[in-house]
Length: 221
Image (cartoon, rainbow, N blue to C red; front, side):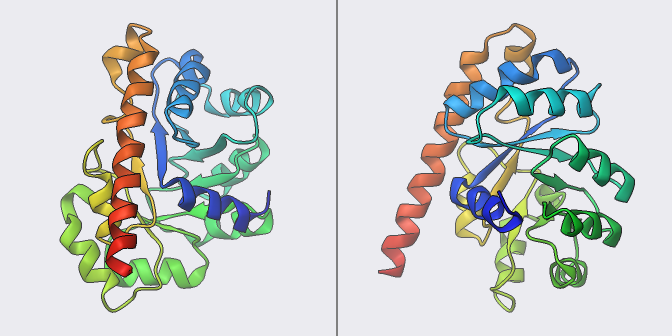
C-alpha cells in the first residue's frame, strides 16, 4: 500500500496501539489480541528488545489488514532501519526533518512528534502525514481545540493521556486518530498471558471511538 493508503486506513480505524514490550516474544500474541478487538494499527517501539527482527518476522505472520509500524524513531538512520524491517509507517516523539525525508523517499507514512503550535505547523508543512502531539496529557483536549480552531486542516494524533473511555472525546476535540499504550495494553495481563483482557480493552476503545464519530456526524447533519 502507498503512503496515502496507509494514512487513510489509520484515520479510518481511529486508533494506533503503541506496544512498548519488555518481552518481545509476546508481540504477536499482543498484536493479535488487540486486532481481534478492532484495533488495526500496531506500533512497535524501537525500545522493545529485538524490535527490528520482531517487526520483520511479524510482517510474514500477519495479514495485510494489520498495519504494522515502528515508533520511538529518533533519526534518519533509525527510520531507514524501520523501513527495511517492513514498517508501513514510522512514528517519532520528536520533529526531525531527516525522519520525514526517509519516509517520503520510500513512500512510508510518517508521524513526527511536536508540542508547540509553531512546531506542529512546521512539521505538517514539511510533510508530516499526521503530527503526533506529545505528551498530550500535559496539554489536554482544550489545547487541541485551540490548535484546530485557526488551523483546521491539521491532522493531529494525541499520545499520552488517552484511555479506553476518552478516546472519542479526543476525536471530538480535533484529533484524527489517537495513540494509546498502557491504558489498552494492561501490563499485568501481558505478564500473565491473559491476552483476552487486551481484546476486551480494544473492544471498549473502539466502541468509544465509534460512538463519538456517530455523535459528530449527527452534529454535522
